[in-house]
Length: 90
Image 1 (tube, helix red, strand yellow):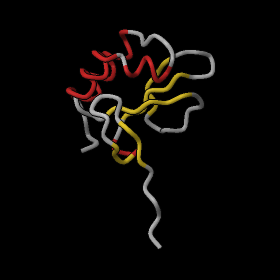
Image 2 (tube, helix red, strand yellow):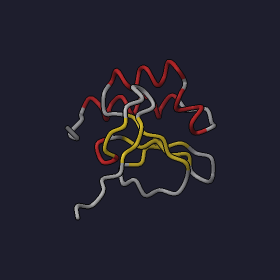
Image 3 (tube, one colour):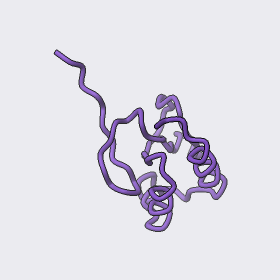
Image 4 (cartoon, one colour):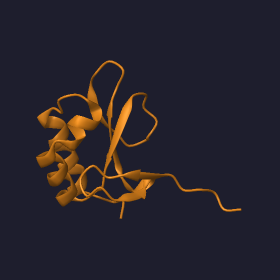
């Protein structure tokens, strides 16, 4: 029997995709927001496709902020954009 691949929903395009193919944004228990490339940080997570269009849509609709229940700092959005420019995920 083949192992089940975890799926997560993108906050931009709302499509379900493989968890490993996406970027996780996490709100830690201290309330800080950061990017989590290991997928193992404690806290509430939200996922975005490594696509600038998805990030732009998630930012416009404020879906990351609603999901994480906290204001997303500008530097987190900027870092996400830089990671997507240098995307090696696929």
